[in-house]
Amino acid sequence: MAGKIKWGVIGSGGIAKRRTIPEGISQARNAELSIVFDIDEQVNAEAAEKFGAVQAASIEELLNADIDAVYVATPACLHTEQVRACAQAGKHVLCEKPLGMTTAEAEEMIELCKRAGVKLGCAFMMRFVAQHREALRLVREGKLGKPTYARAQLSCWYPPIEGAWRQDPATGGGGALIDMGGHCIDLLEMFFGKVFRVSCFINNTIHDYKSEDSAVVMLFFENGAMGTVDTFFCIPDNSSKNVLELYGSKGSILANGTIGQGPAGQMKAFLEEDSEDYDAQQVRTEAHDMVIAPEAVNTYQAEIEEFSRAVIDDREPLINGELGLRSQKVLTACYESARTGMVVDIG
Ligand SMILES: NC(=O)c1ccc[n+]([C@@H]2O[C@H](COP(=O)([O-])OP(=O)(O)OC[C@H]3O[C@@H](n4cnc5c(N)ncnc54)[C@H](O)[C@@H]3O)[C@@H](O)[C@H]2O)c1
Image (cartoon, rainbow, N blue to C red; front, top):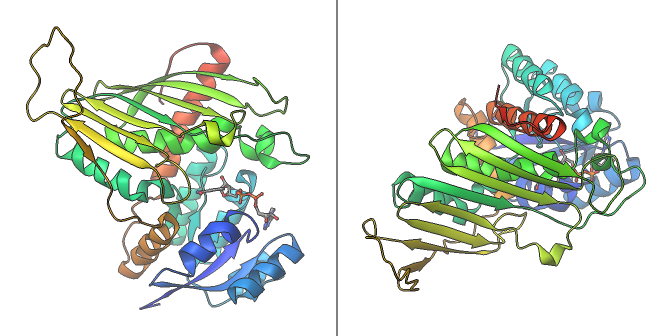
């Protein structure tokens, strides 16, 4: 285990094949791919061949292999049983978001891993976006002043597809809100700290599948700031610029396109040296703007390297099961608010 963590992958055919294996496990300096499993044999055979891995015929075979950690990248409804199997086999496990479908499932996964003495990570990889790290540094250094308002947006076009697990809450836990809004809420909590109260609307504005295709959330943070998250499965991809906006008493940090899978987007900060005097003219100059363009980081490589390092160093992963559980708690409050029409405090 010393130098490189040996990885197995459960669910090799989706995001694992598109991103996490080629950009993450294969590129990470402290990781190597050993074995893959997918319920779709053909997809699994292709992934095994493409990435030079052993092709497992079952989860049991994968877990019996000489591996240290497992990346679970299957539909949300399978996360709990597969994390349980990994924990019982003594394997560390990085589970895709959302961490299961409910708060109870996330709690169960944390407990199972704790009892088995294995590490549990949750794949909120957008925390590793280079611009987000820099924005977080500015917020932590107080450059934004007292946080006042934040907005995060993540939308796409996702038409009805027969059997799509995200389009039925029984398999996805919900729709746009849990799938993409979860990333947005997680990011805003990274920047501004915990949310204590939410108000939320969900709807099927365009698509008539069982999960919501539209969600807007209002967030109240413990530090007094407010926020909104807007996330839709029914806006053309190119129309949503996946905006991130952070405002405070000393300025703002505004970005387009940094929320997403690839290293992309632009971010600018508009910061005052000292709090501005009241200006009746409300003059808006571009004089204070600062482009935030750190060297790009591949988020999948960063997440695999971070988790592997946590295993090697025998410490808690930075993005651990508790953050996955936290996300579920906020999302649960959002769905309750949408259902009841009430403002809901996070339990
Ligand atoms: N962080 C990100 O960038 C990101 C992006 C997309 C998806 N995700 C998450 O990754 C997970 C998977 O999403 P996806 O888009 O890859 O879904 P997908 O449907 O495209 O792929 C899931 C894969 O799991 C396989 N599978 C289904 N049942 C299985 C079983 N019982 N055992 C083994 N394999 C099984 C499928 O055959 C498929 O190859 C979800 O939790 C999703 O939220 C994360």
